[in-house]
Image 1 (cartoon, one colour):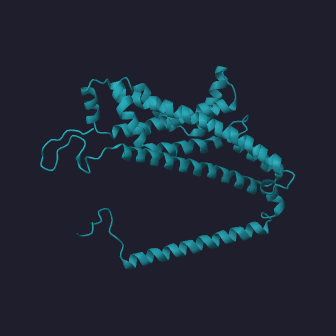
Image 2 (spheres, helix red, strand yellow):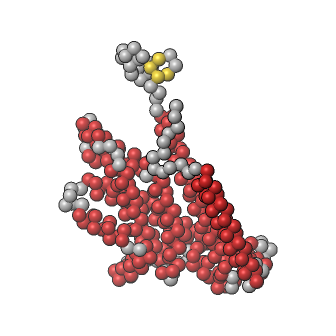
Image 3 (cartoon, one colour):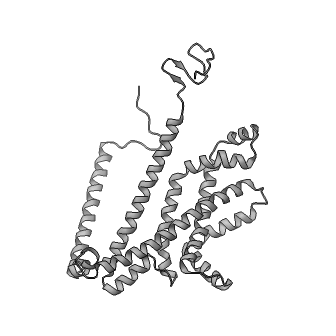
Length: 305
């Protein structure tokens, strides 16, 4: 059997592979040299001195307990705001996607206008506008509530577009089959289309949830009364006079949380994929067909129980 022919690109030959290898080695060496030069420059300026890192990494330092207590408090605020925004964004996003597909051509115009408006605004502008609007309406509560509302407004429309794309990618025959067996359009959307769309678009949805977590850091820039992880980092670097070290540790915390979310996404995807494979009944089992299909001679067989 002949090897499959490349369609999108030609397989590189020996000379092209050698050039790629040489370019990769040169790029790696250049990057290593740059990192060494940066490290030497930082060492000259005393950025590796123990007293700058001790409050963050040395439990024997007198400031270590207070520093990590403040980091823990900021982390709680960040995770709480992100978790609430995630739940609200997913729920509202599913409702928006279903409503946009269910409404008629003219009925969906206001909804489309709102979606396009919120999609076009930068997240930081949305946070500022929500803060100003809530104060003008006299319903301002606190900065954390403002952050949750702003993140929900922005990310719910993004999630709705992701889910809508997943629904539109499904075969139209599923809708017709659902209507043929007596389901309403709302039931077809809820029972047939939405579960498949969410499952198909799960990687994109998880990526958007990670974006929500990272967007919480914008609160420390535009909101003055929130003690999230970003604001705590600002306070600590001013108190300890070590901005490079403080932001480095805070950055590692964000990276660790995002890696955990990525592993969670992979676990959920494996569970869903494994569940679907386990849930399928084989067409032919040892001893003959078990699903009412035709046997090897073409004669119909009944299901065995």
